[in-house]
Length: 267
Ligand code: KIV
Image 1 (cartoon, rainbow, N blue to C red):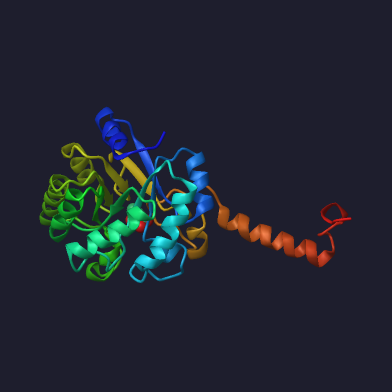
Image 2: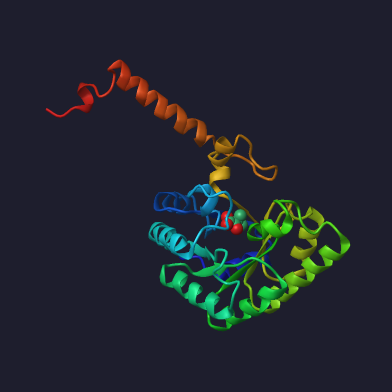
């Protein structure tokens, strides 16, 4: 049965923890659906994990939609969330609606956008028009230049208060869930206790209602390329090493005349 935002609300009410993973392509979406991952995020981390950009800022709506359609074909029954990339909602509520509509037409069921304060009106604008919105607070990567790097956020008392107020404002504006990224564990716990919508943590400790990871980090692809995985990532597979070994083994077999052999030939 298809997962909806009502399931997430019920899991929060019942204290049932769940996960979200990023997905950017058809085969991964199919595999994650087979693994019964309930929520898939076509994240703007498409930029650095798949397209080779240095951070999430360069990726465009056109690029995001291309991958969103592939994920929708692979996992139509999961709850699919399209991440609004940098530039898709910063200028006006009208831009946000236009781009969210494109996502829903591409098979997404909801959109995600980053920030508090100034974004609250946009969230209200979208939800009033029947577009479910996932919020995102804390270390919001689209603000990497404003932060002066990817650093843990909301460490001071005033920043903590602002984040807490933003979380409540996003919930009041109609957000159905909230990603908390790169903030102190106790603050994430407090937000999760106070909100009635589920919080989804990444680098925010274990007390969120749900957790999210970038699929390439979980599979050991990103860590392999970068040489290190971020502190908050647990790597569950070493696909980076597996891919390199498989490509080397194939090359060795061809070089030594072991492949293709008769069993892999037509007669
Ligand atoms: O784009 C993304 O992958 C995200 C997750 C890390 C939450 O926003």
